[in-house]
Length: 397
Image 1: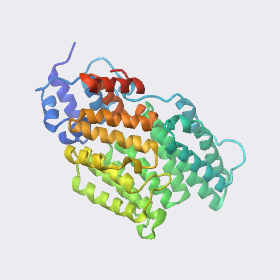
Image 2: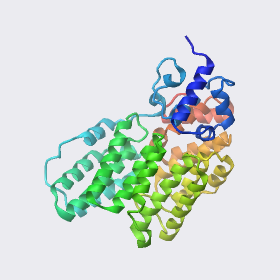
Image 3: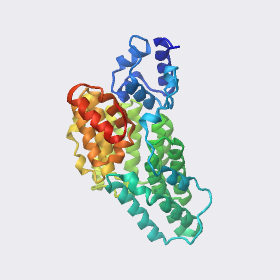
Image 4: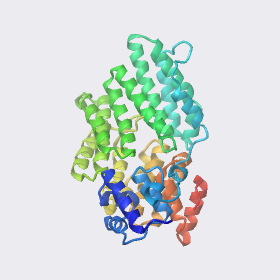
C-alpha cells in the first residue's frame, strides 16, 4: 500500500536534518530552491520523479530509496554508481592482509613507478581502465618495500605507499563499494603517519576529507584538515606551501557545503594566494591557480548562489587544468551550476564536453548519471542530446 504524500515529506525532512543540511543547501545540491524543498517536506508538492529521488538520496547519503519512499527497495547505487570491470582485481589487492613476497624496490625507482601511474591517471580519457592495469602491482610493490626497507628508505617507501592508496581511492570512488573508499583513505593516512612526513599527512588529509564530505560528515572532514594544517609551514614555500594551500582549499569546500559562506571564502582566499605564489600546478595533486578557480564554481553552487556559480563557470579556463579527469570533473561541476540556474541547454553541452575529456569520469560520476537520466525526459534538443549522453555512459532515461 502506498504511503501518504506527507510521509515522504516527513522522511525527507528527517534525513535532511540528520545530515545537518538546511533547506537552501539541500536544494542547491539537487538544483532546486529552498521553497521547493519546503513544499515537498510539507506535502504541498507530490513526491518527485525517480531522477530527482535519486539526486536527493545521493545528497543525503541514502543507500536505498525505500528509506525515503517506504516502498519497494531500490539500491541508489544501482542507478547512480557504476562498477568498473576491473574493480574486483583492484579490491583484492587493496584488501590483502599479508605482505607480498619478494625483494623491496629501490625507493627512487618506486617513486618513479608511482609518478608514472599518476601521470597515466591524469593523461588518459579512460583513467580507471588505464590505471587498473598497474594499480594492483603498484599496491603490492609499495607495501612490500615499506615493510622490508629500514630507516629513511622505509619512511620514503611509506610516502609512496600513501600516494598509491590515494590513487586507489580515486579509482574506487563513485562505485558501489564505499567500504573500499574508506579503506583506501585510511591506509593512506596510516602510511603517511607511519612515515612521520608532514607533507604526506597533509595530502592524506585532503583525500580523507573528500570521503567525509561525500558521506555528509562535513565536520569530521574539517577536523582532519584542521589537524593537518599546522603540520606544514607555508613560509617554507615549495612543497609545504602547496600542501598547506590544498588543505585550505579542502576547508573552503567543507565550509561551502555547510553553507558557511564567510568562512568558505576566507579559506579559499588563503588557498588562492598560496597557488598564486607557487605558480604552475602541482604535478600529481593538481593544486594551483586553475584548480582554485574551478573549485570556486563548486563552492558557489554548494552555497546555492546560481548566478555567481554560472558567472564563475563561464569565466573559468578549464584548459588550464593539466589533467583530463580533473577537466571532466570540473566541467560536470560547471554543468551543475548551470542546471541550478535552470540552464539546461548549457548543462547538457557541458556534460558533453566532460564526456569528450574523460568517458570514465562522466560514466562514474553520480551527478552526471542522474542529470543525464533526468534531462533525457525533456522535449526537444535537450532531451535528444541527454538521451545520447545517457546511452554513452550506460544509464537509461
